[in-house]
Image (cartoon, rainbow, N blue to C red; front, side, top):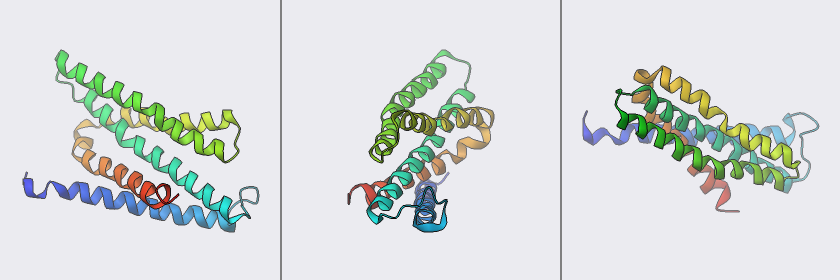
Length: 172
């Protein structure tokens, strides 16, 4: 391929990730301001903003886990049969698995701050990572068609996460 255009998949994926979070933010805001269930509606504007930030963070981390699972699945699905490629795939899976612990905490702690029970917070922390094994199986099954899309998926996840951090977490 042309090296000068290598940035295009990253730019497209990143922009789509930002766009997805902006749309998600709009939907969440509309839901919290009265479009949703009575039990979820929040009268306190400060509380609603805090819930909005928490929901955006949970969504961004969950979305961020999908391309990670795809990457692990592709690395196992693209095995060439030698021991080295197998250990590279295992190392990738272990690395991603280890960094999922702080991601689970990044989901659980804001929910706890919102007053949810500990068991509920832990459940959602675990649930946010459950998309990874499914994406991993999908990546392994569709390795030849998913591999070219990985730059888009990874950049999408980066765009979503960076937007949430810059728009909501840094100002707070």
